[in-house]
Image 1: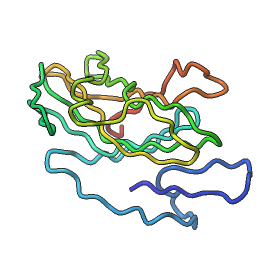
Image 2 (image 1 turned 180 degrees about the vertical axis):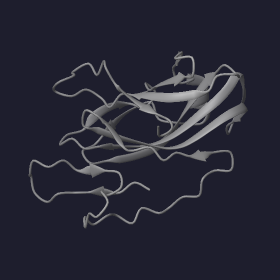
Image 3 (image 1 turned 180 degrees about the horizontal axis):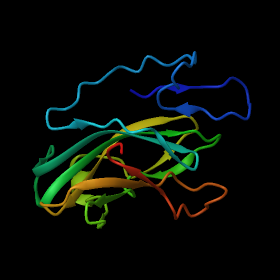
Length: 177
């Protein structure tokens, strides 16, 4: 579950994405709990920030042979991997967010970009204007070799004043150490 707590006024403290710290009395939103999809494993990794954007990886599905959309059936060259994530823009203004830019890193450190056909068939977002304090939850699909195991996701939160081209990104392990 992701909780988003706001600070009144224009203070210097950012909006926090993710669960409230232990022992915190911070009020949280009653975001409904969702049942994990039958083929999905719930991820329990800490929320991670890249610039003004906070990412919470919440689900992982591996070993999918075929995707079925409203108008297409699409087989994997290897296996489809689906990462479910929540993204929150903690900035004071909107950000141009490239929802298909994240890179999946497998157990051999090979990098995989989202499969554009799978993303389109599953009608997932591309580039969106993520408003200030807006939360988005969506899936990213990758087609990786059948024997590969997903290890991490490199996420990109959008341009910031210190990284105008958003070149670096932040790597998030798909399991806690």
